[in-house]
Image (cartoon, rainbow, N blue to C red):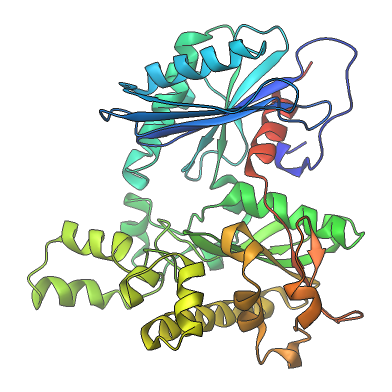
Length: 415
């Protein structure tokens, strides 16, 4: 069975290892969650940030009843030191890396190329392939590798499992995955649509089906993962058939600092006419564009506040953001042919009623609308915000990428 099809913690066991430590290793940060797979509880969560800087920050939050939140500053030299710090924090709560209840460590890996369609128990071959994929994700895969290698050093006897952001999107048909460029050139340089945020899209698409009381195999859903990074996915019967991010996470929706879709000739124009280098254009499109480039702000809450006060630049940034969402919703509706649900997730998707309302504005003819009272009602958890009896459900579904990684990891290694 494909591990990505699992959507709930496995049944409780009487004894044996039943915890998974999920690590998300960034270039200067290490986020972690310890998850009890029998209950779904989190005995501990935390992060180490500003790794390698003079003043690093460690935040550790034990589960209720295990102690209070701990925060401290001090230099953490590298990822090896960061994971040792995590091990000490966990040990202080009685759930350290040497715990017999620890079944495996699950690692988020951004790019798995076309090789990794499922999670993989890490060995030297897997490490070598992740290394080979570094040119496709130069900002992410090296940091992911650092976390894996550090964990292997500290617990060489424990299964380490790599879970890939791209894996959920490997079901995309060739007609959607291929760019219309010379085939030999594309194949030589591995140029195609890969997609990202796959663990989130997998989790949310199945959670949306459960919210509707249906089997994921019977549901067509568009998932909008709207955080500082943003992507859309069209999911037919549990399988992704189209997604907005491409060779890299730059393509697609308007994001916090990324441009999303632009005419490729913009790059040539800026180089030839603007005198910019390739690296300068890369930096522009990835870190000085999107909402930040449009209005000087990438926090949607602040943009909405400024828009409400009549700020024209903030209002235009919001309108461009919403227009791109509607454009993708309509396109993916056409790809799917039939739509059962539109699901909003991640920071903006879960918390901005204004964005949800704007994203479906004018799409009544497609059966898409939000109910004003439902959409603005406070509260968390998965919920419908469409009018009762709507032809297409509009839902808010909190994502849980850590649980998705833990589920895929545990399914692969459990006895």
